[in-house]
Length: 325
Image (cartoon, rainbow, N blue to C red; front, side, top):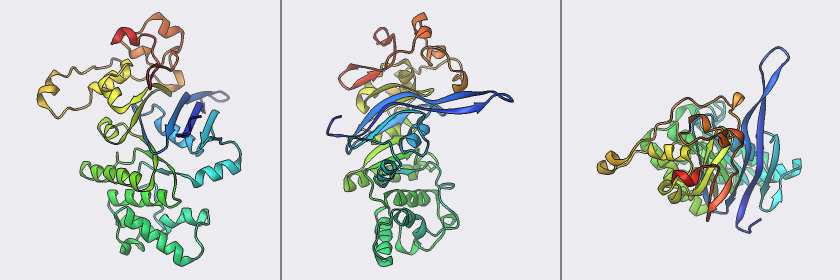
């Protein structure tokens, strides 16, 4: 494991048993054999269509779901026992997608932000607790007089700031951001994204940033990973994946990104995929993307392509990527 690597995931699987009949059930493969690593201080963007398993990766990574199989390593140590998970949770946190449902309506802002401090016993007395809460509120742009109010008194953007302050209360090294701006107005999105950037610089944070808005991901990410139906299909530096996407699915996603230059926008050829996303309960054999892929061959139906490095730092899972470029 590289010294710079903070989080490493090896062959992660997360299957949910779904009841299909009276006595029958079937595994839904939400995350199916995913491997990647995140370096200290970097932001790894994770993108894909709704239902591709992005959020499940984030939640499984923090052991909010027990992994079906695979390994999660943090700071060079494998997370296995309950003690490991508790230590790991002290150093990691999550910002949830919905600022409306992720905050307890019966708790004041001070108690919401202070709850992780209570759980991990991270203060000597009440004065220190109060000082830490007010400091966190200032960091995310909330006034100290907001401390005794309730979540329903705030706008969506302010609620998300409360959620971010709660995530930062344990002074984490690693933060999973699960679509943290998708429920916010566009004007507020930019403020929150810039705040994530500033907090990363101030606190030396490492992010896994899950989103489906490719412009947001490009703005904040150092590297980008693309998922489709529980599988990781491509991973590369942000600029590389925008300028030279190799997987046909990534190429389709990138062609949908709006361009600010009207001339370039007119020249940009939109790659529209045919067909619907297959159900993860009945995923196709071989490559899961083959049913919508214009380049699919018999080999694609026969076997899942290996997720391999084809250029420096550029990984792709496709049998025919060389013919596409």
